[in-house]
Amino acid sequence: MLREEMEQLRYRRQYLLVPQPIECPFNYDEFRINDEYILYKHLDLVCDQYTTGNVSIFLLGDIYDYSDPASGNTEILQKIIHDDFNVLLKNLSKIAGRYMLIFKKGKDLFLVNDCIAARKIFYAEKDGKIWFSSQQHLLARVMGFKPTINPDKKKYYSSRDFIIMNNAGISNTTYYDEIFQLLPNKYFDVSRNKIIRFWPDRRIEKVDYRQQVEECAKIIKGTIEGLANRYEIMLPITSGKDSRLLFAGSKDADRVYYYLNEMEHMNNKDLDVPKKLLKKLNLEFHLENLKGGVDDDFRKIYLENNPLASEVFLPAIFNYYRKHSTKLNLPGNFPPAGVSHFKLRRKDYTGDFLMKLYGLDKYRYAARSYDDWLSSSREICWESNINIIELFYWEDRLANWGTQIQTDKDISQEEVNPFASRYLSEIFFSVRYKDRLPPTIKFSRAVIQVLWPETLSMPVNPGFKKNAKAVLVKYNFTGFLRYYRTKLI
Image 1 (cartoon, one colour):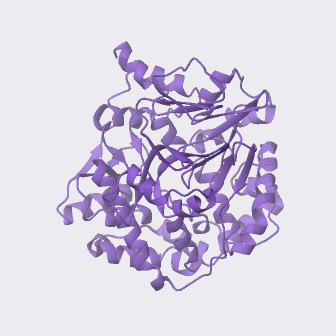
Image 2 (cartoon, rainbow, N blue to C red):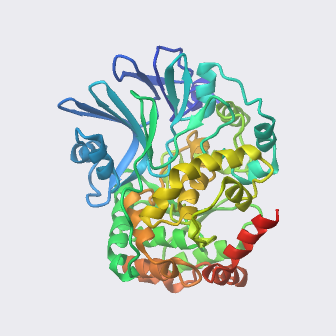
Image 3 (cartoon, rainbow, N blue to C red):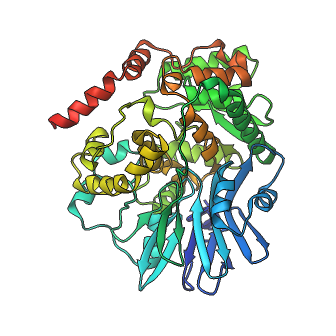
């Protein structure tokens, strides 16, 4: 690689929001946000600004309005902007995307990101000032922080469990004791140095799935059309439910590249089902061969950006860069997914319980982090009629395990999860568990039937093991087994 190309990949698509001028370590544009803060954003990171009256918004990343797929970032900002930040947050609930938004009004400064924290906000305090970045190692570099000295943390970051978690952190903690992550459904009040939860903000009642099918289909279809209007999109296709929902939603979208990465130990059904399905629909299916190796210079800069980045996904990430750098990738992790593998409604969960539930019981700091999360979430879940395990999956697992690869993949191409809409998640939360759960997945099937019924001509999540597990989940056997397992550990 040429030197210029390598420099362009250094901290690609990242940002720094800092209270003093710095020597920025990547190719950047610079913006003065207010008298105190300076924004440095990588040249390849999309940035839009909009000001009306005494309110200004800086948007890093892209946003999409399913009700108006032709609109761009600036048009959407014009529609949702409000001088009351709480009203803006409500307006954002129907907006999908991967973004970090800076709201400025007078001396007030608020930061909020997309509903799954895919565009990260890491923060740390130094000399009474708060520093922010999209990447923890970048923030540590400019602030001079060293990796953790906590033996419990060091044990996790050198463990097999860390690899299983996609080389991601736990809760709001990081590899650096001074640096933390802003978790989903919260915003950062910079002026007052406070983190505030803003969702859930109402009680969500369970309804019959038929009341929500049409609206859900409209959101998925409109969002994917909006994505396709701006970019050539690539959509990974497996045999799974979420993949099929996105595939069905792409029926009328232009420039869609349907594919699957050829990985070791991949499920044969995940290859056979989409291959046969696309053939039936006269669409081209691409199997991405990842055996060509990784350029040494690319590997070097990839690991300089994140010394803890996944080596497992590096061949795929290099392939995206080499062949698909101008396309927008659409993964399909979905926030209300916790109930699909654990269904117990209790009010007395503890950090120990959550830690053991996800196999992290060897790391005591995880329990402390989870206790902190529970203390701020338990009552609001009870009042909002939300299963706390689902919210935990959303705000911990998805914000870490589910989005880490996206951050590492910024070096190669942009990626947006079409399910990253708080309004869409609210709809799923309102649907009764029995209509969401496998093996029947009645609600998802009904939505797919509206979007593109022919995509149901091949089975969803086929296989005896998957369906047997789904039955156990449906009747809560796995929930009780996991619960009593934690009592025995």
